[in-house]
Image (tube, rainbow, N blue to C red):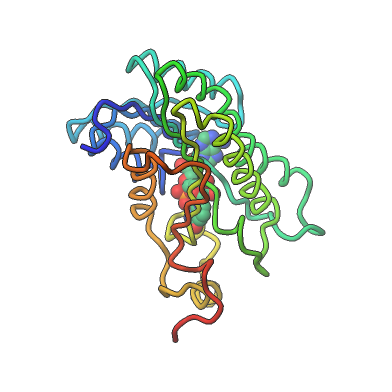
Amino acid sequence: MRLENKVALITGGSGGIGRETALLFAQEGAKVVVTDVNDTAGQETADEIVRNGGEAYFLHSDVSKAADCEAAVTFAEEQFGKLNIIFNNAGIMHSDDDNAVTTEEAIWDLTMNINAKGVFLGCKYGIPALQRAGGGSIINTASFVAILGAATPQVAYTASKGAVLALTRELAVIHARENIRVNALCPGPLRTELLMKFLNTEEKKQRRLVHIPMGRFGEAREMAYAALFLASDESSFVTGTDFLVDGGITSAYVTPV
Ligand code: NAD
């Protein structure tokens, strides 16, 4: 029960990392508000928590819309009386996102609006709630691509995740003496729908796997455990970090055969 008496708001909780984290946080005692734009799957995440004896609600909320982000924070406080943990995790990787020459302005804007502005809005409306609660933990999902360049590009996605790292660092410093910690979670390549829908051939998979020392993609559950550490009081001296959970990819030059 590492999150006993805590209330958590998790964006992008319909699938992948968000869903696994919602289930794990609830298992560890947190009351959870799950948000997403996919209502059916989001409700299913909340229902599963309740079936397992936990407390959870789903709320439709588009992280690129200020009113939706504000409403999600208000909803969490109304339902559970306070908010202690915010996991700004929702994100997209668009199939038309490519190099600088070919990527359309509309794809850039869409990606930035969800991946970067979405995290900003989550913090903008979430931080006052954490202040009202006497402190808390914010975890913003970035990516290893914010740290490594790739010749299989998605420039809007990469830039949006770089923005998440910079934003996280600055907010961590601003709020460090208010008992509010702000950290970025940097997953490596994962076996979730977001990436696997692109890596639909063995050749495409191998093009990536050769660079990962562990020789496999990560699992959403492995990100949930990292988020749990950052959310819990066990990480009480951790703030402003780019928390890499990447199978060693950012440390590698030549990988084992
Ligand atoms: P996923 O596609 O399974 O989950 C993302 C969720 O975000 C989905 O449920 C989706 O409906 C939701 N979402 C999309 N747009 C939204 C919006 N405007 N408002 C609210 N919700 C929205 O993918 P995932 O792998 O679990 O990704 C979660 C986060 O992890 C993302 O920020 C992603 O960029 C990041 N990430 C993923 C990988 C990977 O390899 N899968 C690697 C590094 C970082």
